Image (cartoon, rainbow, N blue to C red; front, side, top):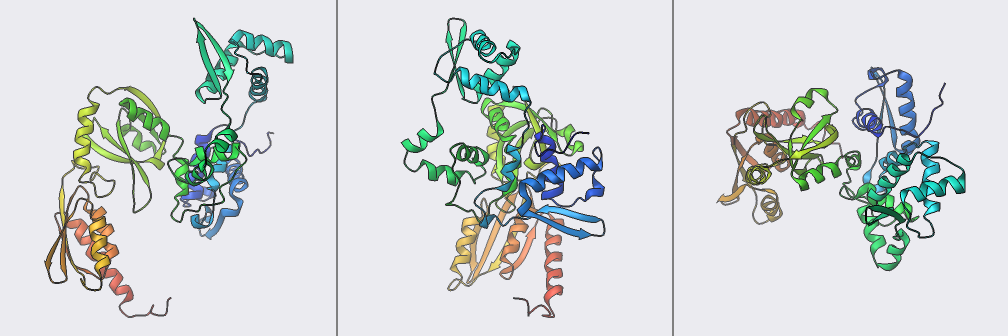
Length: 418
């Protein structure tokens, strides 16, 4: 029987477990339907070995719930990065890595056959030429090895770039990498650079750091590459029912919600002739397709329609997108609450703010999704006079929520809560 190992061969599987069981935290052991419960126990032990200090256990009628609980403002390194360093390697992978590094260590440029012969002579190990070629191709793509062409023959040599040299050469580079190692745009790359140089971020913590974004970083390079090359992509969802809508889509841009922190892939869906925003944490993998000949015209249309997205939504998926008006009246003391007016001006996005009288203001927003506007407007509770809009169900829900809150607090039974 195989023993338990902290290393994994398939990161997609690990990402799936972390996402469902430990981040969302809504599943228990009995909900596990993939293979055996032994498999779940092994995955749980792996995550605990990576993030033991950040695990939270809650008992419920359905069983024990396990989740990750992290105060991002008190950590200098995203603990989920550990999952990326858990990939397993075969014995031949490890041997071939060190053989190639040693053969090329003195700065020589060698052909594929010369490298294969040297490995055979120096280490008495025989590898298929194709296996060595694949490894060289992989390292060339990652910048570890430089390939030079002399006629039709390819010569391989180690890159002369050394991480420590860059840090020594450029003042402030260490601090820059430390900072960006905890941002969603650089994340695991910056963390890997620090580790390779024996460094650690000891300067920066980010209060609102959405650490779960790192699970999406593995698909972002493929998405950005497809956008740059103006190609179709096909995506596989963690929710199989979505897959029928995720073939031959045209990626436009990656959105980040300033309200929830979630990231979305804004795309054009040709079969529905509309734009939509797909949550990145629902996308398991993407594959690049053919070039879209009409990409530029679709992108121009995207830029136009994007103006009416208050958040990331292009409207209800079930219906054709239609623009809706939302009108909110506020009462704000102009003498003592100028900061509230400033905030409305700063956050209104495509809305129009008007002064309708002394201490009275009206915000009009034209958008594809009224719900997104009204979620934001709730943060001005206490200064809202009225809410009106074309989407009557959204307005009704807003008033129902306010009434429920009023009924909850009207008797002041919670006044002693600090």
